[in-house]
Length: 484
Image (tube, rainbow, N blue to C red):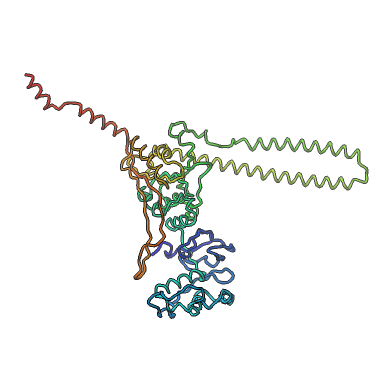
């Protein structure tokens, strides 16, 4: 049974779901009264709430979704088939129905299956086609006229397929079979302590979190101001999964390795900002009130008694302005306090993440970024425990070749492998199974290996050299006997 069709998993409001039509996918957020456009169809997901994931829906008039009823295979005249297609000419005159006729059928509320049946009956060449050509014709018309979608639950396989087909540049052209090999080579499992450095919109991070199941810890290294997790949010993980997720900036890695890292270097606002703000606001208010009083005194001396009403109106407006300013100041103070609270929380998490990295006992390292892998890998391997796997993905081979050479020179790793993944899809149908005509040109390259301790290897090597230099005892005896 497919994971998207497991019993008990029902569509709820606020869930992240994936719309599927043939081999096209789109991730959406399930909300009521929200129009969704998918494959030139618009509809609302209100009626899908409460149904099981994997249910197929038909788009009816008004954009509402109705569960598709299981229909028996149409016993049309498709059994009458020709032996070959040699006499069929594609001149555009074989179909009697025009575009206006098809549009009139749609306006009457006739659904896709009935329109397809009408097209078959009004085709002059359909019965002369072979059985395979007839199936191909029906499949093509279903794709065009049947407004059918399936709502499935997000998973690594579905989301990686969706991103690779729709926006491969956002995930560095990381193909789904390559991602599967990375998870296997990295030994991703529950309870691990993993380090991830990726610029694939959070797809690799989400795949690791899904496989770990909320057990263990994941440390995400990110460049710039903050991590990007657009694809991670599409998985729809519960809150408990994010409690095991930590983040750390790449700009602080060097200081952490050298031992100069401290929590004081992290950005944070001083706690006395709010009182200073209050004092400054108070002084400004006093100045403004003094200015207003002087202006009022000068104006009362200069104005006539006939202008008393205008003065009253201006005083009312001034009172309204002061009330508005006070409310605005209160809102600003609350925003400042909220901002400080978030900064303190971020600082606390960064300190916790730094403590986890300083233990240098990570169970694995996964790198899949648009940056050059050599400096990233050499610096991040410092936090990985011995006898642990690491995997590096790159769209091109040359950066990984340089990385391979540097690792061989430095040492501390074994079982280095540089591999290229290759994928071909097959069509499997009765009497016509064959490779598909279109296939992916490349799925990137993977460099994998296992960490070892360098000091032990060096000590063993020095002892071996000493044993080689020292002459055996049997040879010494023979030399003494010869000299005598």
